[in-house]
Amino acid sequence: MVNSIPRFFVNVKMGMSVEQRIVIKHSGIEIQGCVSVILVPDIALNEPGYIKTFTAQSGSHSKHEFQAMAQMAYYQYQDDELDLVTADGEIQVFYQETVEEIASGMVIYRDKEGEFHVVIHDSLNKKKMLEATNRYCTRWVRLDI
Image (tube, rainbow, N blue to C red):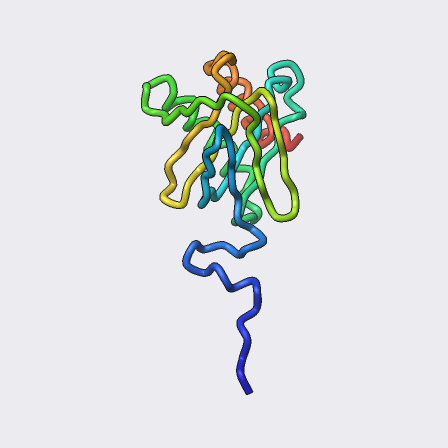
């Protein structure tokens, strides 16, 4: 009898299952190996409830991870240490069976090595977008909104 490997364990090298893989597509570029993502449409400057989060390694600590991501991305931006890539079209985030699309906004993501990166539409105020995300994620942890 041949043992079959459950589908959950197919992508063990990446540390996440096939169902939990997160992929970002923008401007003809595909970014794979994303561990955690914060999706921030431009409307979040006025209505932060539109911010969405995704992680391949969910657990009870997830909201603290997003708060740390938002805070570190903001601090790294202030210190000119953040990898910012501009998008000239729609940004898509593929997670499990869903696809999230934003025509104007920003995506903060953490790669497998733990580095933070940002994909943002060039027309947006980068500092304000990062501030709004940091503020939202901090309140989310503190107030459990």
